[in-house]
Length: 82
Image 1 (cartoon, rainbow, N blue to C red):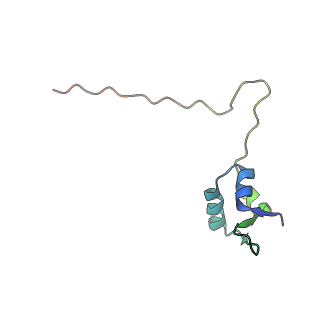
Image 2: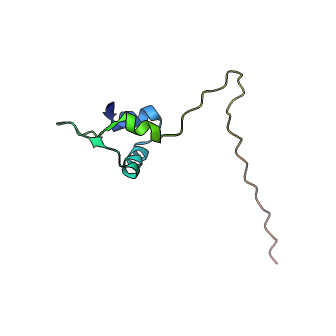
Image 3: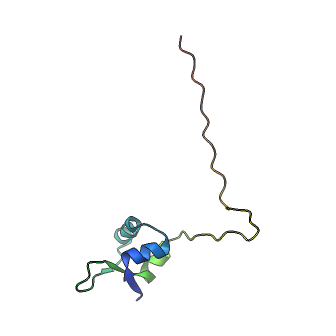
């Protein structure tokens, strides 16, 4: 078991604390507490497989992001009032 405080696990995985709590509840993950410590601890090995998003490294050719550009919203012209 590779346990760590919930905040630290969230930071390492690049997700929010709320997301970690959601994963705990949805998948029934075990949480732990140490005597005298208010923090919640979680097993890293249990949560890693559930986090499917991993950060992509920037390409070496400098092409930028591999994500498509966000389309710009278009405005429809209002019909003139009569």
